[in-house]
Image (cartoon, rainbow, N blue to C red; front, side, top):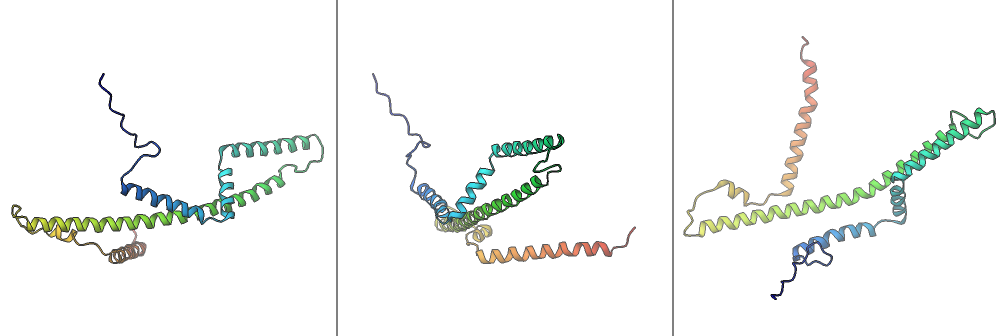
Length: 202
């Protein structure tokens, strides 16, 4: 019997071997998240755990049951003529829920602030990779243009677009151009209502 060839390795299996450039990318992303977790303080970790706890669907159900039981118990006992801790319209419960809402809002804002720091680091990494990719593409176009000019079997012709693309963009100049364009558009939008108000009505 002819031996069967071994099955191809699964690229998604644990311990899969990736090319070096993919492994470097994986390591860089993992290091980014690991550094973000190491920089978190004990209070930030506690706040994040509480936020994750309050964000669970069962917490909404438990809170609804507690509020319903509080209103039903106090309302029924008050209707029977007894003295209750929080008679309708349940001012104590309203105050407790308002205080809880303030704390939950603070927890969410604190968690979002920590998550925004990670998002900023990701944006910086994405921007650096985009600039590096643009420089690599410009270098590739430059090498192709040199090959086209030097190759005896390829007719030499002028390509202004390829020559422009072979020059890497200056990030500072691009940023200034974006700022100037944004300021121009904002100035036009600000002047538009004044122009419409000066026009005579029909």
